[in-house]
Length: 253
Image (cartoon, rainbow, N blue to C red; front, side, top):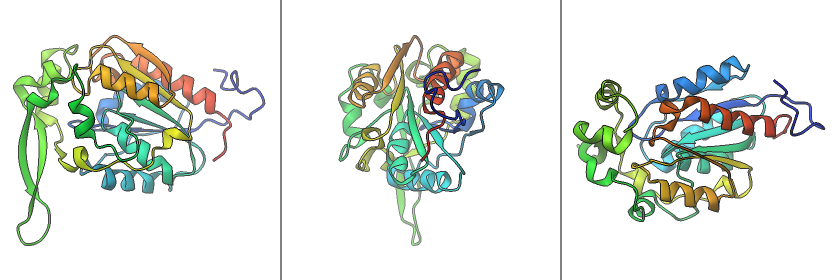
């Protein structure tokens, strides 16, 4: 593979690729992409996103990025797009962003308001509310999960029912703060960005994902599939990540 075809003047050093998963999921959602990237010789890290809120999760991710030597290509799925948009602003080794069916909020926006503007999303009606301990003294906070009966339709309609039943059982709830925290200054304003838009996204909503990717000035590819496009169409997602990785090869933080 020629990693210098788009930047022949650069050394072609491959970035470490960090993949941040979204709400109601875990890092295994990237498995099909990880294997393909590793076959192309890339170092890949897919950390556990805490799903406790944009501010907390972005700080956690930025801390990880600061412990990686060399340039990083940072990718996020769904809610993970908000996390990478915020985390990369304090991680100077990030040289590019990839949004995979991912939100790319602007400064001051919160994801709850953004999602309320989607005509394609049906996720709001599929969520169930739980409580979790949020400190000493018995304080609790709200988190959300997807109703197992509605997960396939709202989240992963192009996957087999057996697969979505497993996803429903193993999903990780997201704290309400994931939807109410105001986003900080976004890294996509200063970093080159790429985006995969899933044309059948009923979770984040194809309309919202497309408009935010356009606003971010991303190099966009549209792929037929559900919100979990990296599971149903891993090769197409990998191809776009590889395009980004080749474009930033040799970039120095």
